[in-house]
Length: 406
Image (cartoon, rainbow, N blue to C red; front, side, top):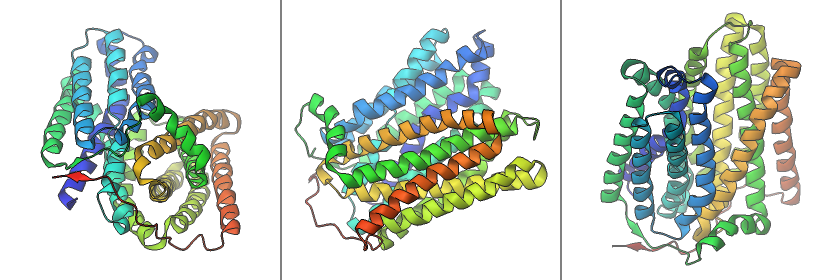
């Protein structure tokens, strides 16, 4: 797979992931235009997020059953239809329904990852995973800013219509450049859905990767939930735009994830996991000063959230390299199990983060981050004691990859 195709896949991941996040920026505009309450308009965001979780569970396993090119292009086409329906929605009810469809079908990133690592050499998988993750991060961060700006200028329908055009353009480009692969599995759909649970039971390294991600992503979500509450409190007295600006600062993470991928290829996933966990603990120490307010507190929030983002995303790349090597014929199902566990951890992290802030303020959120990261670090220590050579890079045996049709 050429570098240009990998970059196009990374852009496609960003376009797809952005469909889940740009509605957050235009929710107030939707409420005003459709004469709905802010809580009711926020249902468009909730529907997209729950739809995305459902799409991970229901559709990502199909990456092992159908040719990747056809599956990705079909999902992009369905996403474009959902975006067009949302942009033309006459009321809030149809908009919420269209948002759910968009969330379900825009699960391109977790399907593109297994495709890409299956078509490159083993010593490039970390770098490729990092590049795709950079694209997803770009979509997550930039879609809020661009969606809010376009929504203010042209109305809330414009971001949906622009996103539909981007989905169609990327679908056409991918149809032209992606290789045709032969699916590695012939299992029926019910068996595919049950397979992630069976893989979790059978593969201890998958369970370990899932635990690491659930803990670190839980801490990540708790911090960002708490940051929104802290910045809008009397300590800072800022508005929602400040939250978006802080998130945009962390776009620098996009430059670090390819480096983390190359280090994973060179040193092995466990070494990168250890550094990422220590980095998150350092982030917690810096973030603790964010409760002071003023310029010093804001600087601590900027530096601390940047360290947190780099640590969490670097750990994610290491985890993916580890479990992708387990069963090349089941990478989409492995990714389904992993992302579902990570999403559960993130949801619980947001919930506990809000309650930690309500009970103990900002120090409670920082303490929660330490506890969750500490749990991952303890688990990593037990794994190292059982296998003393765990930090050395391990070359997996060569396993035939899915064939590529001419």
